[in-house]
Amino acid sequence: MYDERFMKRAIALSERALTEPGTEPFGAVIVRDGEIVGEGLNRARARFDPTSHGEVEAIRDACSRLQCLDLRGCELYTSCEPCALCVATMSVVGISRLYYAASMEDAGTAFAGLTRAQRHPVDPDALRAEAGAPVEQRALPAEQHGAPQAAAILDAWGARLRASSGPQDGQA
Image 1 (cartoon, rainbow, N blue to C red):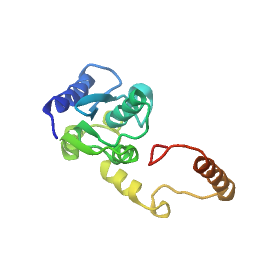
Image 2: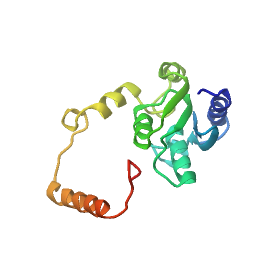
Image 3: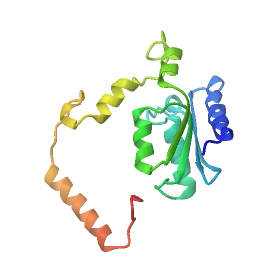
């Protein structure tokens, strides 16, 4: 159930970008059972890490704090509608509910007229189309090589986990 305290925290994290060099105004928190278990602020420029989005950083923090890769039952509060990279990451870890403040359109309006060097360099529509397309239909040229060897390693790893008491139910 939505709790305004957590959205206020996500927005407060995003506000740090107004004074903290190398950050961008995208903040997020992960909540489990009414408690914040992860926080994140976009630090892509500071870290030279294009995956350092607020939502991804909050997920990294929550997974580290909880010592798991399974965030089912957790909610994510974010200052802006997540891009496809963040949505994919949320899906991988099993975030149960998303609450967001500003929309992609709000971000587009705020960044209108800025150069690529000045603005957040993600085109959300292009990212959605590219990420959702089968590999052979993507704009990025791709070729497959070495499949038999790589597939053999995947098979061996899967067999080893099945034979042991390895991670279960998506907790890999």
